[in-house]
Image (cartoon, rainbow over all chains, first blue to last red; front, side, top):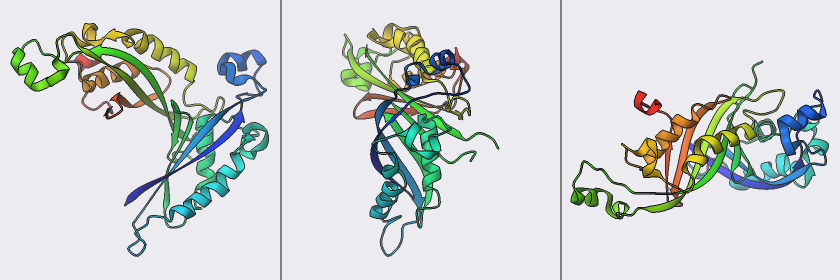
Length: 137
Length: 145
């Protein structure tokens, strides 16, 4: 069994806001992330799949296919968008790095032929990232 | 349905000096074991510390832990202590060599006390070419302080 990881980048805007809370409570918990005009990041996505090495191709998955799936399912939807306003899964879910990792897992699971999704890692900045392994879905 | 669990990792940076030296050993033996890391006046590194926590993603905040809580904890418990300091002069290293392995263990002890998530890993890069991981295995009461 081999783990294989592919990276992709997208740039997007977001803000953190819980509509059940007052303005003050949102500011207290989320700080400057609660600025409703939004702010943005250059996100890096790492998708790790696991599988057996095909004896003929020597591949776990065809990297070009994995790249195309990541592009179609995630990058084309998230890149240069405002996550809160333009990406349906964040209409009622706060687009934290954790929730973005979970959302990307949901978008990719079952769509990668011949391999199993192992981990979704999302870097919000080089110094902050979230990993999701599908636990508790 | 239980909340999905995720891992959250944060990287911190500090610069510190140290010297690898064991008082109980002869100068020759120290030199033999530690090489240039034993040079008498010490040397320094830009350390990178990557801490990984796990926990359920709160349906209210969308977070494993609030980063501002983690950042202020890291500032108070680690950076205020270690940044621009000589590691050998700090309490944890008075009787323990200030290797990055021992630094990892000390950092585990520190971050295990963060109350809002479960510590999974301490990763320390001493330079761009060497890094160390500690998962809390075999921690002793002495280290738990």
